[in-house]
Length: 337
Image (cartoon, rainbow, N blue to C red):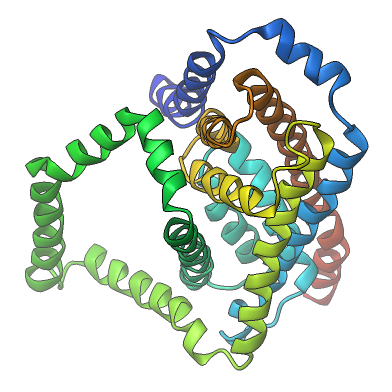
């Protein structure tokens, strides 16, 4: 491994992990670790935590079937098992390389099903946009009906408002966006005869074909139902864990929905498993509803650790299953050829 590839590995793997761990340390540095450890040892019904894991697996499996709908609209033949395994493996890869898992799953389907990678990338964009819209709608609903919570949340965390304001008030962000748009326009307008540009156009055309899959999809109703099932599954994956702790058991489903929404926003940060941002969002939310800070920290630590380990295990099953289940298929192809 040369110096350049080593540097890239450090940037992609260790830098996000380091930032997440630093935030985790910052969150827990002034807390009573002995009290947190006491909750972890004696204050958790781990049977309930384990039961919640079934809903996470259910949601990710349905996500595989939903992606299959998008791929099917491309008029491509494929085995649904490969798509489900790829989606599960996606999450294991993301635990090592944030956001790389999405590219990896497209690569696996290209490898085993011989479907155009750019087209798959287009369907993936629709897949991710659908989830972004769902999180946005849930957040908007929570904001409208629980505005007092957000006032309390930002009052406790004023640095977040300052960060948002500085980001949108910076002229460099808008200048950068204008430069990018102008550069893309210039290349495709005046350099269109170059081979590289023509190849880029072909790739973009295939990506657009994948994006269009949602419009030409025959079973749009099933796509919407599966989208709802995914997020209902994720919600219960999170909310059921409330009943494993005495201090969250009686908070109610509305608080569970708010905490779930905030945790989903935390996961969007490109850090392995959302480590750090997820904990911050959940701890801050529970504290706003009267949970002791040490108890909230114990909750976040237990739930995130167990569910991340489960995601990794299921993902590894998907990673291993792909070559194993396709071994016979590849042998048949070789025999036929």
